[in-house]
Length: 240
Image 1 (cartoon, rainbow, N blue to C red):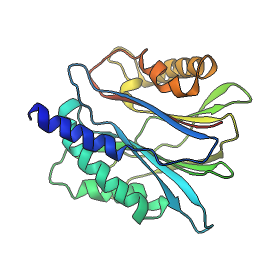
Image 2: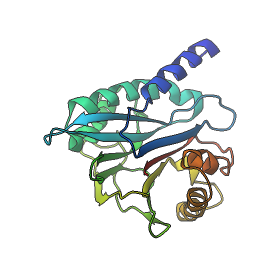
Image 3: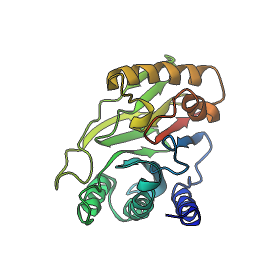
């Protein structure tokens, strides 16, 4: 794949990662970095404001880590991001990840696999639902306690089986709270286990959340992650 082609794919993926206009008091910030030796990566997110039965929009957002790394993951990520954005507007929130799984299952390659974390949140009262498909656990920042809590939603990666287990958790984001999403490249290392990586992220994220601007939190975390052999992404949804 030549440079012009990859650059065009990257622009398409960035367009899919656009953030919708949010009401005052809500922010989304992110930082992404490709694997060592690559300029392009396959981690991405899609987000949209989706009408509900209550008559008001809710934010639905999905962070995705596709199988592969760098330029090799980019074409599949672009196609999957476009399909997933369509699913956000075309399916109930409870069926989005199952629809995404069906899409991957229909692809000709056996390597069309991805992990994903989805959040659907009412931007009036802060009630949210997190669904996980084999993705590292979301972290919840509780502003009043100045503490991070590991969310308990777990599940099976997308594209592996016809009917994946998709774990769900619920909660409420109060003013001053935030949700921290990330891909496994942020916490996985060859010389340590996942729990050690998550423990490190709890410390790094708490430091970033308590000592600087909210908009800088993903970037400050990312600067502390060594450039390894996997793509990395951090995304923060906050209620100010």
